[in-house]
Length: 433
Image (tube, rainbow, N blue to C red; front, side, top):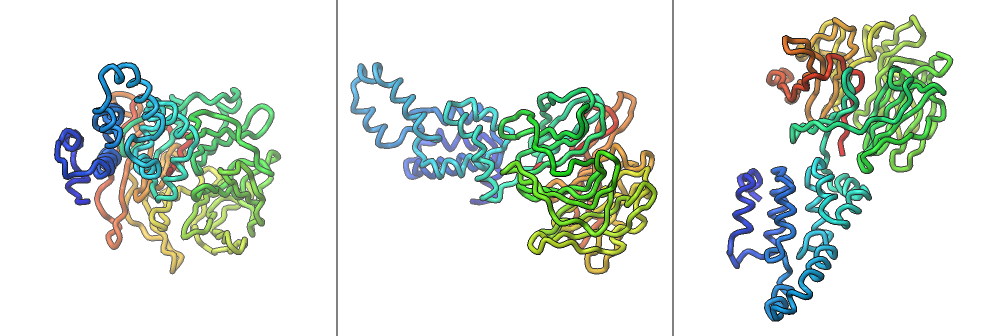
């Protein structure tokens, strides 16, 4: 399919369906139309209108039968037949396997609307099957999840430029005001914190669109390093309920909702950062005690279940007053935001060194890196921070796509500005589903 067709506006879609060209088969129209819908983010109210246009979408055999019926028969039985035809398949005239592949390409912003089309669509969206199908087809849509000072959790769809507020978390007051950590894995957003009774994990399900309690880790902790890779996540290090610095690690399987204890790291560390790169999990930075900073990193091989220490992977370390290392991986390349110099640095895997590639669009040194998010979102780096201006406090999402061979690339783009959101990012997670 040519790029000009794939980039065509929604009006072209209407022309396709209004065309009386008999040479174009109904199946070709379906596939082309739904690819256009998916790629152009067409409004779902038009999807519903087109999907249930019986004259257009009726299978050829049924259209012939209708022409043979008497007007009286249509009046008596037409409504029942239309309902049966609508409920028997997702897209009338199209085999369900093909229809599901087409639906997998639709934006997940539209899933709530799709669920309202009929009972079968509602069951499909509620089952989570489309998310599994998207993973099999390699379809990844990244959303940003934010918790800032003056608002509860919100989701941002970069493609649609659309903000959505999540339901309020049914946690106790202690959890609301305590420090929290967040992690997106599979179709779940995990938020770690403290309740009156101790550590707790709340989970937002993208499928159910609500909050519930997540099973606790085998050894509950805080101030750990973490990273996700598809349906799994690993947390490493941190501090236990008594403040002891840990070197143990655990793997979370979002499909099973279970935690598995992994072999211990070589060194205990807290206030560290974790990430996946080249299919392996890494932990860098942090403190081995309340005063001793770490410059080494550790690599965990999921196949051999072993840790390898990497000396001087994070030179300079981080002080106890600083935030954990601000790191992000784009296209299996590690980047870091220096909290002291306000520079973005790129990691050289072969030489175990860091090189400055550009300047941050916001200052990180004013708050020692706290209140700032530095994340990977697909093939882009996101820097999310607060700004105080004449019209009040806003959160600004800056975006930059690193270019191979030319790290400087273009200037930072402003992806979105969220007004009346405060000036401090408490938690941020990127979900790719």
